[in-house]
View 1 (cartoon, one colour):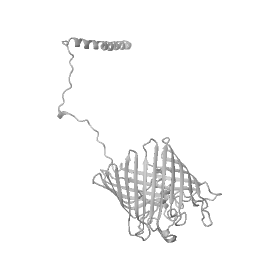
View 2 (cartoon, helix red, strand yellow):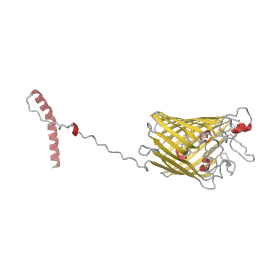
View 3 (tube, helix red, strand yellow):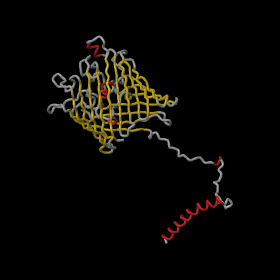
View 4 (tube, one colour):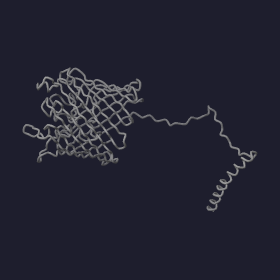
Length: 428
């Protein structure tokens, strides 16, 4: 029965296909032939036209506009130039400066940017380490907040926790929005950030450690006069200080230009007096950052810094020359490639010149030291939130600044090589 119905259906289709041209031809030859009546669609009056229904997007709640971030990190660093079983420090490193296992940091962050519905914003970042060890929180303390003038690097006698950021924000209805940010916040300068998971490499560059500050207390105004331009500027207490060490503020700002798609150009700057009890002799840094992510799976970055300070304190005390102004500059290039969703490789190449020895304190005041480093990092996502990193770093200098040995704490080498295994776990 089914086969019979199928044959019948095919026969009908074939018949219609062959008869349609013949009927059209007969109609052309005989205009009086009956014309099939085609029903026109009913006319719709303008008032009866129904616009296409659009689903209203449900506005985000206050909690949905809030971003949570938290992680813990631990690392083991092996200095490949050490002798015997004695541990030595990794000179000129900010965080990974010890050749042993370290619990680096635990961080919790809650932030919200201003929006049209909720024009206010806020940010709170808390970090902590294990008592009895040297951790990242101690090295990030701002002067006057868990650290005073008597504390000396690496700040082993300071608190094992830190309030890295604590600020409020408000967006005023001026043009496209004028945003005010006030409180304690991280610096605008630099390609790298304090949070290790947000960097391409585990170790921080010389530029991050010596060329720029980490945090500020103050206020910033941000405004975007055009889609291709964003401006930020405002007064801050100074470099890594919560209580000013003089009676004058510094000024910090940023010019952001999204030049083309996936290319961002940033010019950051800070200037102002940073010496104790001294309202003149400003310290100034110009910081250029560029990022490009227009090629699938490839990340490119560049950072250039140039800084100077008039009548720098250590040079003035040394009295080795008439001109006591100091300067420093350097550059760093970054490239990373995501081979899979889990596997990434990253490379950093860097040069930093401490022209007068005042930033690194690795040589006598007034002397110059040039630093070079190459860092290769392999990152693998082991499990949801759990990431492992294996990193090799080679440091070199034109003077002996590495391998400091007792007695006398004398540097013995111009190179330093380290191998690091690091793990971090992100909770959100």
